[in-house]
Image (cartoon, rainbow, N blue to C red):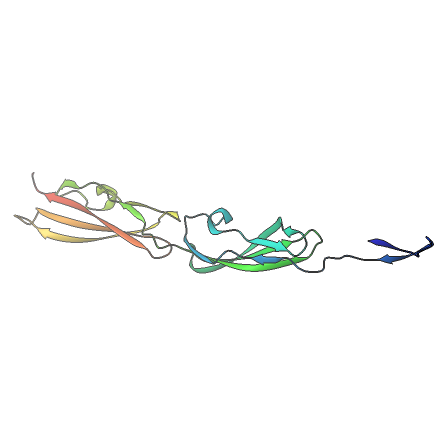
Length: 191
């Protein structure tokens, strides 16, 4: 601001002088981060779901230049991790300030497992899953579950070649969450 000061005496004589006022913005904006959150692995990590930072400035009032950058730290498994989100606010004069938000992502949901149907086979047929069927499983995070195992227990029937196998199928996702289902295999001798 160039300010011209003018003094006028009682007879109308005047004189003036000049003052230079330099206005500057050297104060960083005030930024407020959203609170840290814990979400399940299938949830979105976008700010629309996890929260958005806000900022104000001593001069501009509202700060619209707010951005973020994420750093991922892996956890105990692929679907357990932490995002450190650094929010940065820049005012119209280039002053910046930042804050940190922690987003914890976890997988606590058991996989969904589907057992093969119960079957009845003759005693000479194989009881292996290639003959009696194999369980399948999906996960809310990993999608495909490859760790699928089974354990059998036998219940004897009316004779040595008539019996029932109770097959418990177990699916374990990449974070160790497990689920199981049961298949009944009835073995009989009808020949």
